[in-house]
Amino acid sequence: MVGDGVREIHGLPDDMYGHVVETDGAVVQFMLGGGQEPETVDNVDAHIYLDDGAHRYATFFTLDAVREILNKDARTGETGGGRYFWCSDQVIVPEPGVAAMVAAVDEMIRSGDIEVMCSRIEAPEEDGTA
Image (cartoon, rainbow, N blue to C red; front, top):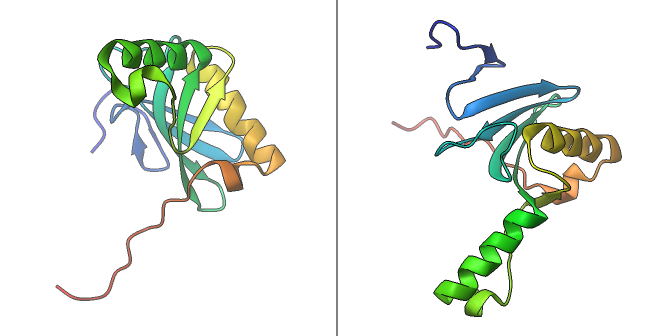
């Protein structure tokens, strides 16, 4: 249930992960956490609910966020000491903030690139068993 002051878009409460944005063609649920702010977030997972019913997933990064991860891995020894970075469904945006990420989603929808860039999440099948 959605409480006072919390909006709901297409059944998604805005307080579940901190930020839900409705745009032409989609509703995007940004999974903010740990003090992340919509204006400055530079590394965040998002569920993308398209108007055609498809549910897709993306992880947004800025180049600075990727650089920070590589530097941390160089210090900790992860990924061969920071020799590579990878993430499925990754989308690199030119600047931090949800606005840049929503602009990317809009363009991915317009161009059709979202079909190959972001994995589709299938609804679980109901088999009728209890």
